Length: 470
Image (cartoon, rainbow, N blue to C red; front, side, top):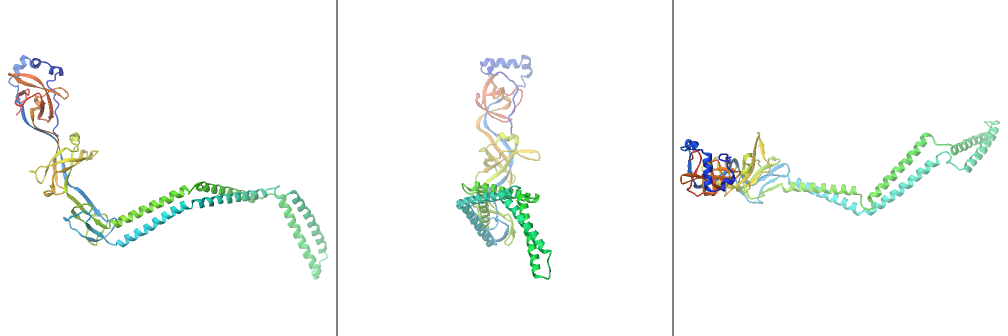
């Protein structure tokens, strides 16, 4: 980039610019003492204010690309059934370029995914439609769980010592034991005369055995009424109550979820299943649609990387719109302030060094690109006309981005400028053979010339100090 130089020589206050012309002469004499003036009189140089053009630009490089390009392929891996174009063919938007084999399988996948989606939607609808029934069933489950808990609690209570029987039942059991014991003793007395060969004696022994069994059964009943559970039995009773409590709590939670409508968790799951089925169907439908490759826009077939019968995965056909030529450009990061969207551009391709193409900046990347430690500003230039009539995609070029241009303006060498304050300038104009300071308005400036917008006329003579200019 042609950069602006920092002028530091002959600095004066802004007030001196506004003083009378004679003060300019005094200022000049103050700088050049009589002795210095005598020593430098022969070295003082002058130049004429001329009319000309001034252009500021930032230089970079670029590569020619199509205005629009697409790499096309099938939606899923498969074999090529047909290719209807060749590289170099010009096609219209919507024109069929190639077809995939085994489309029946893709159609079957679409049908299966449509069925899965229908089932998922039906499940969601059923969940919403049966909300009242589900709530009622959940309420019944709570009642049943409550009853089961009460049964478990009663069983637990009835098994504890002191709660197994009433005092009347215990007294009746004690009385029954006395009766059973007496009957057993009397039967035992009759057995003493038992003759095993006597049928009557056999019956007597049988009656005795029954009396013994009754006695022990009656004793067991009495012991159970007055006893307590074993450790194992108590653990089982405790566990039964705990389980019934847990089942009741679970039934109550389930009822709370559905009493005002469907279970939110189940609805969310059903909705996710519907969404997943929709995504699967969309993917299958896309694969089926892309089994026939159609041109997304009118353009030129640039490359075909497959033949009929080949198995392909991914893009294998490239289409480009060559009606619009664009240039991917890169400039040094120091020129970031010299480029903007809309700036005019001049391009010279390496293959055609005598031809200048014009265009404009249409895009700028929002961040710098860094490679091998070098940072660049990257963007896109659109060339005027149809450059592809002469050029090929991928050609390299040098690029000048025009950041400022002034035509037919007054120009002076930058050595003639005296910077009074930042952005404020003056020049020494030769009047009657003497240099007089005059403020000027400066426009564009490069390392050689400055545009004078006011304060000087073309043809006037200004000094450049001791620097000789052409």
